[in-house]
Length: 76
Image: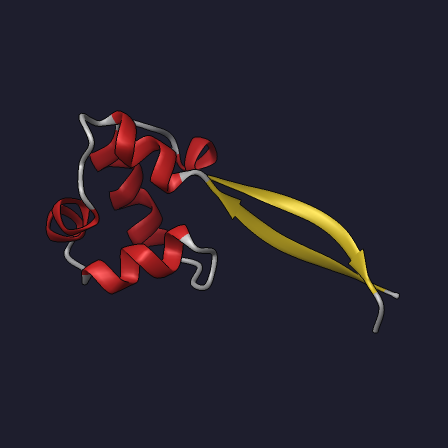
């Protein structure tokens, strides 16, 4: 078995706490498409460090509050 590291994110929760900010609002503020925000929130895409920092700044959170490393084990 190989250790597997997944990233869990809380972007959607923090976005909604910002007066119901839409995906498009956030996307426009950080310079990406709405589809990119959707993919991040669904866990299909992990942002670059730069994008993670921009998301944190716009959402008034730290990167660590938005993203956390989740460790698990998978069969390989």
